[in-house]
Amino acid sequence: MRGGTGGLYTAAELAGGAMEKYFAREQIMGTKKATSGSKRAVGRIAIFPGTFDPITLGHLDIVDRGRKIFDEVIVAIGKNPEKDAMFPLEERLEMIRKLVKHHRNVSVEAYSGLTVEFVKRRGAVAILRGLRNMTDMDFESRIALTNRRVADVETIFIMTREDFGYTSSSLIKQIVTLGGDPRRMKGMLPKSVIDRLIYYRDRKLGAFAKTPTDSQALST
Image (cartoon, rainbow, N blue to C red):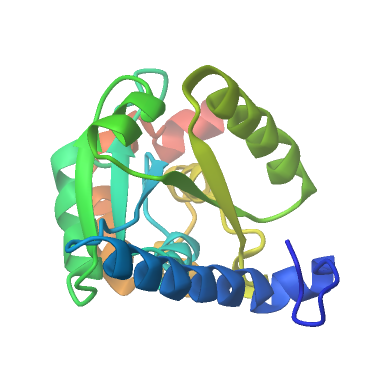
């Protein structure tokens, strides 16, 4: 990818938003070419997949930045049988739809099966993923290379903002189910999600139903 001076972008430039500017510029140029060569331009759709259990401010940041690059972003909630869900699928759909309803080019759907098959069914041009660190890069790059080889599906990465570099749904889930106060996570979670976590905790619902009581914890 070329920088503004004709050279390759550095890692610092990419983290600073050069990638977003590049794709935004390419989107404008692509739209002009499409409209000049045909009567109807096809919008570019990106799929942002995950379990989003719970959705974090880091996720929403990727959605907000991704929607400025693509014509449409679909937040795709995958059904993962290997994970014990904190929130039921329908509730996650409802929560996320409320959180992104002010974005006209963002929608939320659930899917099962392979992500690449969902990408093709929706006519998307790429999978959108966020990267927090080098561990993410190693894991995500292997999946991205596999998806491109076996399904010819591209992946676009966006570096997370520094504020969300250590935000993890799995870690948050572990903390709150072991007694951590959801209200201490206002820098990582939307208020509506925090409120639902408190509601579930107080009523021992979902993953909180498996949380040991104080007396059980003391006896182990």
